[in-house]
Image (cartoon, rainbow, N blue to C red; front, side, top):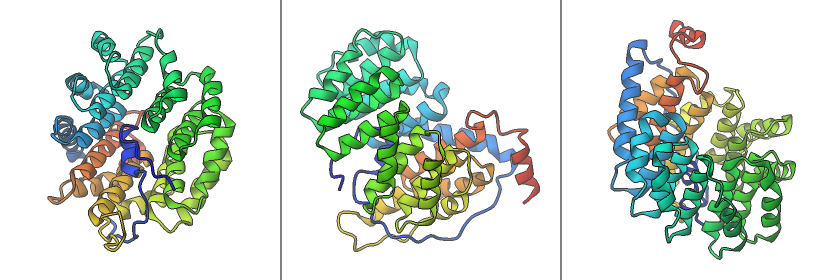
Length: 364
């Protein structure tokens, strides 16, 4: 079992959780109402506004996930929030802001990032060194390897592996392979494998693929998530995603498979993801997994899967789910990022004028 908690290692990782994933399945009705064209831009603005509030929330986890959402789907609107959170007193928030600033190469923050690279918290230093590397200053990048190989804290080692993987430097493969041979903590091993998969290392991809078939639910779900992040080429990973979409006892596994297929360009998990967007049947007798956490986790994973699938027909259900008065904040963050990604076209151009959206409107 993966028992280590690594709270700084990405908002998506936080949603998936390194906790047992034994949530009961069960969903409310499937929603199919397409969002009218005139409501699309107002929904986008509503989503951006909500992410902005979340990025200034009193709750650190909300800040972290909102910052990563801005990083991934709307860095232009997120720039001010990256700056605002760069000096946050909570290390996890600072980590998220620095990773975001580095990912989008926010050059205006370079001097402040250099200051954060001297922070007493090694997790903050990792994110700062990552950001400096992305901004062209590679003088301290070697510190990431030192922390990965030698730091006594598993969370620090995992975050170092995450940063190395996100730098996408192929010469880091040997370092990661060395760390993999030495590492004893399962959660850190998985993070190293994701980094290797990000760099196209076949051994890392194959190890994650095998874990994706695991009978241990949290291990399988985490492996699927990391493979979806890496998007490796080849039919074997697609085959795994399709198998797990059909054959899994736990919704987290199915939703991670749906997200993985979406990242590969397939909408096979659309119906399933829409159905779990309204999940409300937690197992109230499950130890160490409170019902409210089950609901948050599964609804949020459904939204993330819909984001990856990118089908504009999901906008109606996403809007309905977003507007629920009782919707948990972390779910609304996931819905907001999904809506922005779908409306903006996920890097494929704006939703407006796309034949698929017009067809969706015509099918109403």
